[in-house]
Length: 244
Image 1: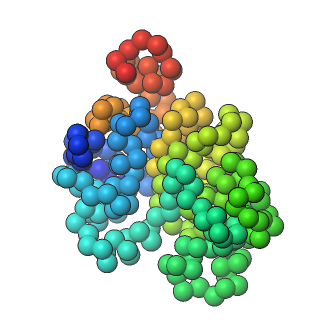
Image 2 (image 1 turned 30 degrees about the vertical axis):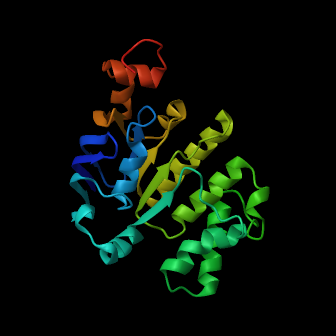
Protein backbone atom coordinates (compact mmCIF):
# COMPACT_ATOMS: atom_id res chain seq x y z
CA UNK A 1 0.00 0.00 0.00
CA UNK A 2 1.02 3.58 -0.66
CA UNK A 3 -0.04 6.00 2.06
CA UNK A 4 0.32 9.77 1.71
CA UNK A 5 0.08 11.45 5.13
CA UNK A 6 -0.27 15.24 5.50
CA UNK A 7 2.20 15.98 2.70
CA UNK A 8 3.03 19.62 1.98
CA UNK A 9 5.51 21.20 -0.41
CA UNK A 10 6.26 24.87 -1.12
CA UNK A 11 8.47 26.44 -3.75
CA UNK A 12 7.79 30.12 -4.47
CA UNK A 13 4.26 29.35 -3.30
CA UNK A 14 2.50 26.29 -1.83
CA UNK A 15 2.25 23.40 -4.31
CA UNK A 16 0.95 20.63 -2.02
CA UNK A 17 -1.13 21.44 1.05
CA UNK A 18 -1.67 18.77 3.72
CA UNK A 19 -2.45 15.98 1.23
CA UNK A 20 -3.58 12.62 2.67
CA UNK A 21 -4.86 9.50 0.87
CA UNK A 22 -4.17 5.78 0.35
CA UNK A 23 -3.53 3.72 -2.77
CA UNK A 24 -4.43 0.08 -1.96
CA UNK A 25 -2.32 -2.77 -3.30
CA UNK A 26 -3.37 -3.79 -6.81
CA UNK A 27 -5.27 -0.54 -7.39
CA UNK A 28 -5.16 1.63 -10.52
CA UNK A 29 -5.39 5.12 -9.02
CA UNK A 30 -5.99 8.16 -11.23
CA UNK A 31 -4.70 11.53 -10.03
CA UNK A 32 -6.49 14.44 -11.70
CA UNK A 33 -6.74 18.21 -11.36
CA UNK A 34 -6.09 21.48 -13.20
CA UNK A 35 -2.61 22.42 -14.35
CA UNK A 36 -0.16 23.39 -11.59
CA UNK A 37 -2.27 21.70 -8.93
CA UNK A 38 0.65 19.56 -7.70
CA UNK A 39 0.03 16.24 -9.48
CA UNK A 40 3.49 15.68 -10.96
CA UNK A 41 5.18 16.97 -7.81
CA UNK A 42 3.25 14.41 -5.77
CA UNK A 43 4.08 11.62 -8.22
CA UNK A 44 7.80 12.43 -8.02
CA UNK A 45 7.55 12.64 -4.24
CA UNK A 46 6.22 9.08 -4.05
CA UNK A 47 9.40 7.74 -5.66
CA UNK A 48 11.68 10.06 -3.70
CA UNK A 49 12.70 12.40 -6.53
CA UNK A 50 11.25 15.33 -4.57
CA UNK A 51 11.27 15.57 -0.78
CA UNK A 52 8.19 17.14 0.84
CA UNK A 53 8.60 19.92 3.38
CA UNK A 54 6.42 17.99 5.83
CA UNK A 55 4.37 14.83 6.09
CA UNK A 56 5.15 11.18 5.35
CA UNK A 57 4.96 8.93 2.29
CA UNK A 58 4.74 5.28 3.29
CA UNK A 59 5.27 2.49 0.75
CA UNK A 60 4.78 -0.96 2.25
CA UNK A 61 5.33 0.68 5.64
CA UNK A 62 8.62 2.38 4.69
CA UNK A 63 8.75 6.19 4.91
CA UNK A 64 10.29 7.51 1.69
CA UNK A 65 10.86 10.96 3.19
CA UNK A 66 13.34 9.59 5.77
CA UNK A 67 15.53 7.62 3.36
CA UNK A 68 19.11 8.55 2.47
CA UNK A 69 20.49 8.20 -1.07
CA UNK A 70 21.62 4.59 -0.57
CA UNK A 71 18.25 3.57 0.83
CA UNK A 72 16.44 5.38 -1.99
CA UNK A 73 18.49 3.52 -4.58
CA UNK A 74 17.32 0.17 -3.23
CA UNK A 75 13.78 1.42 -2.61
CA UNK A 76 13.32 2.55 -6.22
CA UNK A 77 13.71 -1.02 -7.43
CA UNK A 78 10.05 -1.37 -6.42
CA UNK A 79 9.05 1.16 -9.10
CA UNK A 80 8.68 1.54 -12.81
CA UNK A 81 7.99 5.03 -14.14
CA UNK A 82 6.82 6.57 -17.39
CA UNK A 83 7.71 10.26 -17.55
CA UNK A 84 5.51 12.78 -19.32
CA UNK A 85 7.88 13.20 -22.29
CA UNK A 86 8.72 9.45 -22.44
CA UNK A 87 12.42 10.23 -21.68
CA UNK A 88 13.63 7.87 -24.40
CA UNK A 89 17.27 8.06 -25.51
CA UNK A 90 17.42 9.14 -29.17
CA UNK A 91 20.93 7.69 -29.60
CA UNK A 92 19.82 4.20 -28.55
CA UNK A 93 17.70 1.83 -30.64
CA UNK A 94 14.38 0.68 -29.24
CA UNK A 95 15.73 -2.54 -27.74
CA UNK A 96 18.49 -0.78 -25.80
CA UNK A 97 16.02 1.81 -24.52
CA UNK A 98 13.83 -0.90 -23.05
CA UNK A 99 16.81 -2.86 -21.70
CA UNK A 100 18.36 0.22 -20.05
CA UNK A 101 16.95 -0.27 -16.51
CA UNK A 102 17.76 -4.00 -16.59
CA UNK A 103 21.38 -3.32 -17.48
CA UNK A 104 21.74 -0.45 -15.06
CA UNK A 105 20.02 -1.96 -12.03
CA UNK A 106 20.40 -5.72 -12.30
CA UNK A 107 23.12 -8.27 -12.99
CA UNK A 108 21.30 -10.35 -15.58
CA UNK A 109 22.68 -12.49 -18.43
CA UNK A 110 22.27 -10.86 -21.83
CA UNK A 111 20.05 -13.63 -23.15
CA UNK A 112 17.54 -13.00 -20.35
CA UNK A 113 17.63 -9.26 -21.03
CA UNK A 114 16.94 -9.85 -24.71
CA UNK A 115 14.13 -12.27 -23.87
CA UNK A 116 12.48 -9.73 -21.57
CA UNK A 117 12.78 -6.99 -24.19
CA UNK A 118 11.25 -9.23 -26.84
CA UNK A 119 8.40 -10.18 -24.50
CA UNK A 120 7.66 -6.53 -23.74
CA UNK A 121 7.66 -5.60 -27.42
CA UNK A 122 5.32 -8.49 -28.15
CA UNK A 123 2.94 -7.24 -25.43
CA UNK A 124 3.09 -3.74 -26.90
CA UNK A 125 2.26 -5.05 -30.41
CA UNK A 126 5.71 -3.92 -31.56
CA UNK A 127 7.41 -7.27 -32.07
CA UNK A 128 10.67 -7.01 -34.01
CA UNK A 129 11.23 -3.30 -33.23
CA UNK A 130 14.48 -3.90 -31.30
CA UNK A 131 16.75 -2.30 -33.92
CA UNK A 132 14.41 0.56 -34.84
CA UNK A 133 15.54 4.14 -34.28
CA UNK A 134 13.46 6.07 -31.73
CA UNK A 135 13.33 9.13 -33.98
CA UNK A 136 11.36 7.27 -36.63
CA UNK A 137 8.54 6.19 -34.32
CA UNK A 138 5.05 7.69 -34.08
CA UNK A 139 3.83 9.30 -30.88
CA UNK A 140 1.79 6.26 -29.96
CA UNK A 141 4.72 3.92 -30.62
CA UNK A 142 6.98 6.03 -28.40
CA UNK A 143 4.42 5.84 -25.61
CA UNK A 144 4.30 2.05 -25.92
CA UNK A 145 8.11 1.88 -25.84
CA UNK A 146 7.99 4.00 -22.68
CA UNK A 147 5.46 1.61 -21.15
CA UNK A 148 7.65 -1.35 -22.11
CA UNK A 149 10.64 0.21 -20.36
CA UNK A 150 8.57 1.13 -17.28
CA UNK A 151 7.35 -2.45 -16.91
CA UNK A 152 10.35 -4.50 -18.06
CA UNK A 153 11.79 -4.83 -14.53
CA UNK A 154 8.48 -6.33 -13.34
CA UNK A 155 8.31 -3.80 -10.51
CA UNK A 156 5.20 -4.07 -8.29
CA UNK A 157 4.47 -0.31 -8.44
CA UNK A 158 4.20 1.72 -11.65
CA UNK A 159 3.88 5.51 -11.93
CA UNK A 160 2.60 7.08 -15.15
CA UNK A 161 2.80 10.84 -15.79
CA UNK A 162 0.47 11.91 -18.63
CA UNK A 163 0.79 8.62 -20.56
CA UNK A 164 -1.44 9.79 -23.42
CA UNK A 165 -0.28 13.42 -23.74
CA UNK A 166 -0.29 14.64 -27.33
CA UNK A 167 -2.08 11.59 -28.75
CA UNK A 168 -5.29 11.53 -30.74
CA UNK A 169 -8.41 10.18 -28.95
CA UNK A 170 -8.31 6.73 -30.57
CA UNK A 171 -4.61 6.18 -29.84
CA UNK A 172 -5.09 7.60 -26.35
CA UNK A 173 -7.83 5.06 -25.56
CA UNK A 174 -5.61 2.25 -26.87
CA UNK A 175 -2.81 3.37 -24.53
CA UNK A 176 -5.15 3.49 -21.52
CA UNK A 177 -6.53 0.04 -22.35
CA UNK A 178 -2.97 -1.26 -22.64
CA UNK A 179 -2.03 0.20 -19.25
CA UNK A 180 -5.11 -1.32 -17.64
CA UNK A 181 -4.39 -4.72 -19.18
CA UNK A 182 -0.76 -4.57 -18.03
CA UNK A 183 -1.81 -3.59 -14.50
CA UNK A 184 -4.29 -6.43 -14.25
CA UNK A 185 -1.89 -9.01 -15.70
CA UNK A 186 0.82 -8.09 -13.19
CA UNK A 187 -1.56 -7.18 -10.31
CA UNK A 188 0.56 -4.05 -10.01
CA UNK A 189 -0.22 -0.95 -7.97
CA UNK A 190 -0.48 1.99 -10.37
CA UNK A 191 -0.70 5.74 -9.85
CA UNK A 192 -1.50 7.60 -13.05
CA UNK A 193 -1.58 11.35 -13.66
CA UNK A 194 -3.59 12.35 -16.71
CA UNK A 195 -5.49 15.29 -18.13
CA UNK A 196 -7.38 13.01 -20.53
CA UNK A 197 -10.25 12.61 -18.10
CA UNK A 198 -12.78 10.87 -20.38
CA UNK A 199 -10.44 8.02 -21.20
CA UNK A 200 -8.69 7.89 -17.82
CA UNK A 201 -11.99 7.19 -16.06
CA UNK A 202 -12.59 4.14 -18.25
CA UNK A 203 -9.68 2.29 -16.59
CA UNK A 204 -9.29 3.55 -13.01
CA UNK A 205 -10.41 1.88 -9.78
CA UNK A 206 -10.06 5.00 -7.63
CA UNK A 207 -9.57 8.71 -8.29
CA UNK A 208 -8.07 11.60 -6.37
CA UNK A 209 -8.40 15.25 -7.39
CA UNK A 210 -5.96 17.98 -6.45
CA UNK A 211 -7.11 21.60 -6.59
CA UNK A 212 -4.76 24.42 -5.62
CA UNK A 213 -2.53 21.86 -3.91
CA UNK A 214 -5.27 20.34 -1.76
CA UNK A 215 -6.89 16.95 -2.20
CA UNK A 216 -10.57 17.81 -2.62
CA UNK A 217 -11.76 14.34 -3.63
CA UNK A 218 -10.70 10.74 -3.00
CA UNK A 219 -12.98 7.83 -3.88
CA UNK A 220 -13.99 5.24 -6.43
CA UNK A 221 -14.33 6.12 -10.10
CA UNK A 222 -18.12 5.87 -9.87
CA UNK A 223 -18.13 8.17 -6.82
CA UNK A 224 -16.06 10.67 -8.79
CA UNK A 225 -18.53 10.62 -11.67
CA UNK A 226 -21.46 11.27 -9.33
CA UNK A 227 -19.71 13.72 -6.99
CA UNK A 228 -21.65 16.84 -6.08
CA UNK A 229 -18.46 18.81 -5.36
CA UNK A 230 -18.70 21.73 -7.83
CA UNK A 231 -14.97 21.71 -8.67
CA UNK A 232 -14.96 17.95 -9.27
CA UNK A 233 -18.06 18.12 -11.46
CA UNK A 234 -16.70 21.03 -13.45
CA UNK A 235 -13.37 19.33 -14.09
CA UNK A 236 -14.76 15.91 -15.00
CA UNK A 237 -17.57 17.13 -17.21
CA UNK A 238 -15.90 20.26 -18.66
CA UNK A 239 -18.62 22.61 -17.41
CA UNK A 240 -18.09 26.28 -18.22
CA UNK A 241 -19.34 27.48 -14.85
CA UNK A 242 -17.87 26.67 -11.47
CA UNK A 243 -14.98 27.42 -9.13
CA UNK A 244 -12.07 26.44 -11.44
